[in-house]
Image 1 (tube, helix red, strand yellow):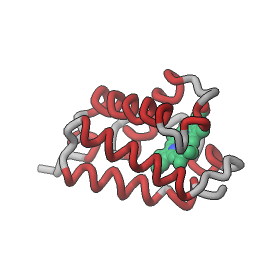
Image 2 (spheres, protein in one colour):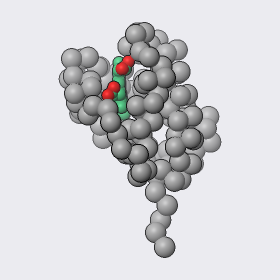
Image 3 (tube, rainbow, N blue to C red):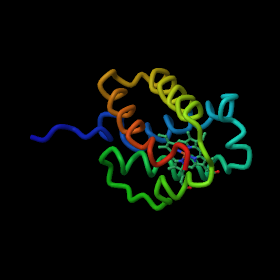
Image 4 (cartoon, rainbow, N blue to C red):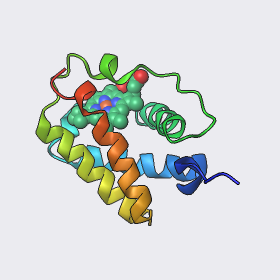
Length: 120
Ligand code: HEM
């Protein structure tokens, strides 16, 4: 028997979409990054980030968005903004009752993307 994937341990697509929704809504209230999302289409960003999250954690979804370097190139995202986004992610993981091990895995994946996102 195989170990359940992170995707499965997070509760699959509907739970991940709820988590991504909380994260997006926190970004729009987080003074460190809110200005980045003023022109965003909320539903669209939630849809594409959910797809990214699902496929990146072992779900069957195919990510149809742009890669992280292409997406964030030209934004000149700072270290502070990156940490602010991680703070929102941790808060959301806690609010959604995600276990310690899964929280650490999500954070490690997020952290590993930093070179493709910060100062690009
Ligand atoms: C681990 C951290 C992050 C991940 C996994 C991530 C992931 C993504 C993904 C999947 C998209 C959608 C790509 C597409 O439209 O094709 C996106 C868009 C975007 N990201 Fe990030 N991102 C991260 C950090 C950040 C940071 C730190 C900022 C700046 C504060 C940022 C700003 C944006 C903006 C402004 C968009 C475009 C939203 C829109 O289309 O309206 N991201 N990100």
